[in-house]
Image (cartoon, rainbow, N blue to C red):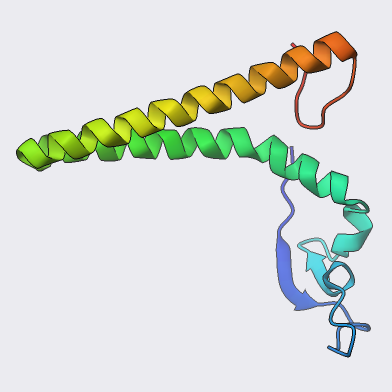
Length: 122
């Protein structure tokens, strides 16, 4: 998987703000000088990109929240224990919602044969 970064350099041409605004797809370029509108032709391709990256990013957030809860538990005494308990409870609920959403999408994809972008059937 390769990542392409959006550069802040605007493409030449239609990037002057007018009455209709700016077409960002034509103005923004990726790191290899490709226009964003050439790579992401439909909104579905952007949604697929977001879905594909949502689970790993949320995994990092869960790890950070558990680390923060442990830090508060160790350093803040009795108040920290209560804060840590709330953070861990919220994190576990968030994880269960994510886990359920992934497997519900897996089951729907398997039963219906519909290809859900970003969800690979195991």
